[in-house]
Image (cartoon, rainbow over all chains, first blue to last red; front, side):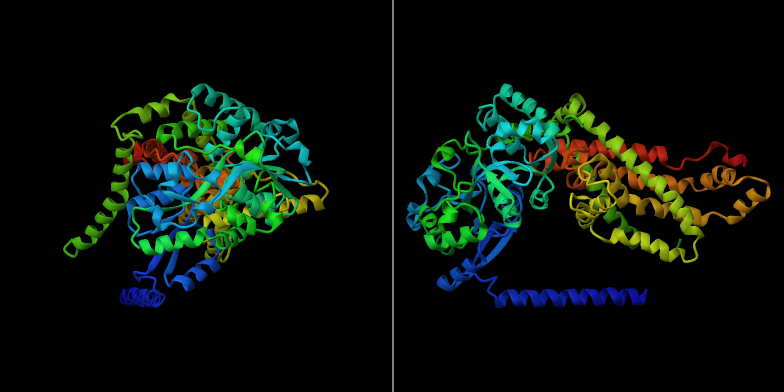
Amino acid sequence: MKRLVSFILGILAVCLLLFMTSSHLQKAQGLTNSDTLTLYNWGDYIDPQLIKKFQRETGYKVRVETFDSNEAMFTKIQQGGTSYDLAVPSEYMVQKMRKAHLLKPLNKSRIHGLANINSRFLNLGFDPDNRYSVPYFWGTLGIVYNDQMVKANQVQHWRDLWSPRFRNQIMLVDSARDIMGMALIEQGHSVNTTNPVQLNAAKKRLDQLSPNVKAIVADEIKMYMAQDEAAVAVTWSGEASEMMANNSHLHYVVPSEGSNLWFDNLVIPRTAKHYKAIYAFINFMLRPENAAQNATYVGYATPNKAAEKKLPKSVANDPQFYPDEKTISHLQVYQDLGPRMVGIYNDKFLEFKMHGH
Amino acid sequence: MKRFNPAYSFLYILWIVLFVIAPLVLIVYQSFFDISGHLTLANYQAYFGSGTYLKMTLNSIWYALLITLLTLLISYPTAYWLNQTKNKQLWLLLIILPTWINLLLKAYAFIGILSQNGSVNHFLTFVGIGPQQLLFTNASFIFVAAYIEIPFMILPIFNAIDELNPSFVNASRDLGATNWQTFSKVIFPLTINGVKAGVQAVFIPSLSLFMLTRLIGGNKVITLGTAIEEHFLVTQNWGMGSTIGVVLIVAMVIIMFVTGERRKKGRKGE
C-alpha cells in the first residue's frame, strides 16, 4: 500500500512538472499573450509558411486549433470556453451560427481586398452582403473515377451512376445532404427542396442505386480510392484533389447539369477578442499572393480572382477544380433548412442505407 | 465491522452517482424532448411506429447474435485448451494483449488485410482463386467484430474453467462417462456462469457497434449505434438519440436478467 501511494505521488509529481514546463514553454512562445490570434480551422487547411510570414510581418502570434466537423466547431463556440478569434465554417453553418447569434458582423471599413474576390462568390443566400463572412475556399461535389476501370465518357453525368455497368463499384461519401442532393439534382430538383414528394422520389431513386453502391464511407474514401478499391466515388472536390495526389489514375468530374457549390468562410465568432489581429489576418489572407500560395498548398479552389491569375496555368485552367462558367452557373449552394428538415433528410438517407440489406 | 471506514464507501457512491446514475437519468430525461425542446413522447412513437427503427433493431440483434455465437464457438475451446497448457498465464496474456491496442487502429489494420490489394487477396491470387471482394461484406464485418470481442469472451470462460475442481472431472471419468458425457454433463454446466458472463460482455457492446459498421461494413450493415451517432453528431436531435439509447439500456437489462444467475428453488434440499 505504501509503495502504491508513493508510486501515485511520483506520477502526480511528474505530471505537475510536465504541466509547468508546458505552460512555461507556451509563455515563451507567446501563446498566452494578448497579441495572440486564435484561428479555429479545419485540419491542414492553411499553409504553415503563411502563418510564419504573417507573424513576421505583423508581430502578432497565431495559434491554430483544429476541428473535423462543422457541428463540433458549432458546439465548442457555443460553449465559449476558448476565445477563438476566427473560425472557418461552411456556408450552411454560417447561416446556422448567425441564427444562433454566434457571429460578430464584419466591419467592412477595416477590410481591404474584398474586391479581389470573384463577385460570383459574394452576396449569396447564406450571407447577404457578406455581413459576417469572407469566402476562404470553395469547391464542388462530383464524381471521381479510376481510368483503369472506367472510361471518361461513361461518367459525365449523375444519371450515369445508375448504369448497371457499375454494379457494386461505387463509393458514396457518408453525408445525407450531399447524397440526397445528388439524387435531387439527377431528378431536376433543388438541393434545398422541402417538398415531401420530391424528397420521397429522390429516396426511391437512391434505392435504385443501391445495387451499385459498394460502400458508404467517410474520410476513408480517400484511402480506398487511392488504393483502387472502387472504380467510382461521389465526393467533394477537396477530397478528390487529395486522392488524385496519391493516385494518378483518378480523375474528377463536376456534372454539367449541376451539383453542389460549397464554401468555407472566415467568420468572427462571438468569442473573439483580438480585433486588430483579426482584421490584419483577414486582409493578409485576401492578398492575391497569399491566397494563391494557400491554394497551392491546400489544393482547393480559391475564390480570390486576383489570386487565380497568380496560379500556374495548369491549375487555374483545370476544369476539374475550376469548372467552366456554364457548369458554375448550374451549381447550387446549400441553405440551412432548420433542424426539422435536416432530420427528414437524414432519416431518408438512413432508410436508403438500410435498403436492400 | 468496527474497522469499516465510511470514506471508502463515500468515494464509491460518488463515483456511481456521477458516472452511472447521473448519465442514465440524463439520457432518460433527454429522450422525452423533441428537437425544439418540447416535452413529448413523440420520440418513442417515432421509434416504435416507424418500420425503419424496428428493422434496424432486429438487424442489430441479429448481427449481435451472430457475433456472440461465433465468438463463443471460438472462445470456449480456446479457453479450455489454455487451461491445459503449461504456461497458461502467459498464453492468456498473449490473448489479452490485443485489447491494449486502440480499436480504430485494429480496424484500419483489417482494412489493409482485407482490401483489394491486401494480404488475403494476394494469397488468394497466389493460390489461383483470384482476388475477391472481402471488405464491405457481412462476413468480414462479423469476422472483425468477433476478433475484437474474443478476449472478452475468453477471460470469463477461462476463469470459470480454471476454478473447476478437477476431481469432478476425474470422478465423472471413473464412473464410466465418455468424454462427451463428461463435457456436456459436468464441465459445461459447471462453467456455464463464465459463458453467461462472456455472452453479456460481448452481446451488449455488439448491439451498438458503429465504427466497424462504417469502416469494415461500408455502412451496408446498419445497427442502432449508427443511428445514435447520426442523431447526436449530424441532426443534433439528442432526444431521438437518447430514445434509442434508452431502448439499448432496456435491452441490456433484459439480457442481464435472462443470462444472470438466479437462485435455484431446489437449492435448500441439496
